[in-house]
Length: 197
Image (cartoon, rainbow, N blue to C red; front, top):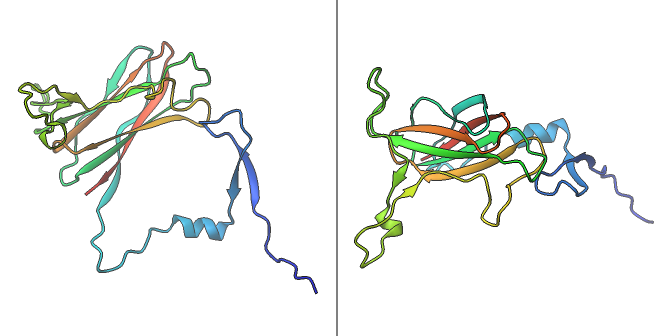
């Protein structure tokens, strides 16, 4: 006797995949029970020392005029070692449009009314990573991104939004996020960060 499968075929919902807008792309839509299970935080072995993590907003959603930059106040992130900053902006639907660049700057001291932030910088040099024997003057790296990929073009065209991540070590107790609209048209952008120890 032939066995019949009692498994229900997964429901496929058509979506637009940002990196392949011309393709047919489907997401498997799980049941409410599966969604509830997927949203649960993972359970770590008690012998494992899990990293402490936190999601914070470095720049609330703001409309940024074309060829303009905007930043937010410095935020205390002391105690974390790594920052993964997501710049999330309105979608772009043409290869002729440009996206946002993101710059993170770090400071030793908080903002003081009438003075500002002392020692704030986005430029750094790391001897552990960049040291070249025989070179006396080392160039500084900037904690910033381009809106373009290494192979040219934008990371995503179409989709719900345009997003990319700047991952750097935490270089100071205070951080500021600044976004710069490379296009001539005003668009919304926000910066959220995932911090980890």
